[in-house]
Amino acid sequence: MMTRTQGSAPCDMLPPVRGSITRDAPLKDLVWFRAGGPAELLFRPADADDLASFLAAKPADLKVSVIGVGSNLLVRDGGIPGAVVRLSSAFGKVETYKNEDGGLHVRAGAAALDGAVARAAADAGIGGLEFLRGVPGTIGGALKMNAGCYGREIKDIFVEATAIDEKGNKIRLFAADMAFEYRKAKGAHDGLIFIEAVFEGTKDEPAAIRARMEELSANREAAQPIKSKTGGSTFKNPPGHKAWQLVDDAGCRGLKIGGAQVSEKHTNFLINTGDATATDLEALGEEVRKRVQEKSGVTLEWEIKRVGVA
Image (cartoon, rainbow, N blue to C red; front, top):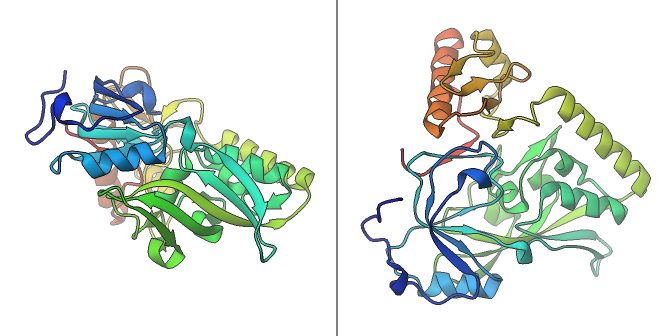
């Protein structure tokens, strides 16, 4: 059981919600690494109004964070203090439409899986979103980190997003507000919880879009250990370098600490071989960074988000 942190609220100080709040909620089964500690409080809001009301009325010193499906997340073994928000299926709706200027748009809830958004776009004959088929996780996380693969990123299709801030205010953000950079959106600070986004594509034949998606999916499965307990790409590609190549050149392919291992298939992936702790995984990542620095002089930057206490 997690010890209540100073400033965290007992249940009788929390505002009423229509969703659910669970104390000492296990998180390891909610993240791809299948490792890590619990959430002090896990809040699953019923809808956007429920989330906004909670944020507006919660104790001022209650820390709030958010997780999606945990595809690029390492929760440390001590768990996450405060309230962890995990959006429900009410935030997972996807719709396609043509705007007044004739643009082909996809509106997706922040809990929608990236792959589901790509498939909905394909069904509607909207091209340009195929790369989302190769991005694990949800739209909310993709917005936070400007997710991408195979030469495309969220910023390339982004129109606008809606988020709720730490005071419960609903706000709209456009590209200039997001300040997209490689694997991050500088404007998407931790106080914002995205609830939906709008993307734009181009008209194309559904069959052609699906064919490209299938090719992308096959390439990803062939190159990455997607059937293992992993957290996606571990390190960002430094300018002028490929992270996997630097890791390989430093002799880290297959390197192990405890139950954690650098993938033999793709060296920019860490794997929980069965009983790895979050401490094992983070220690392995840091050892890889150390060896790469010694070998090449390049400092790798974590792409996986590490949260919680050790």
